[in-house]
Image (cartoon, rainbow, N blue to C red; front, side, top):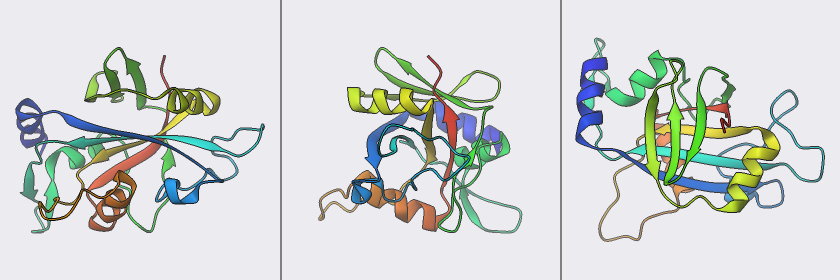
Length: 178
């Protein structure tokens, strides 16, 4: 599985989707839940969450020993401790992974401190402010559903809902590493 994931990494990078959500804009939050007690929180006003989805640009589909279909890079992230995020679960808090801002985007760092995923894109100041206020990022790694050419691309939050249903994403609250 790890060899397939490494091969896929060499073939392509990640698309980066970033957005901010709050209790005041639940439609923008979907499907990331607002933190519960014991999770990141902010005492001054509504909780604002910075979401970063690293979506593989070159999915490496493979089969498990049980015959089920999975994406190798997502399974590699899960093996390294980033929990699978299904429709029935809330993201865990994981301190061994992290998200680090860079000049051209964001990096998702694995427990060894190596870059597991890197997404290029402009990071809005509202995203950075929210991430700093919580000290954590709602980090997602995985593959969304295939887009159909005849329909406009749905919002990342909508695609993420489908990816959770399909079991093709891993996610957690991770520290913002600056």
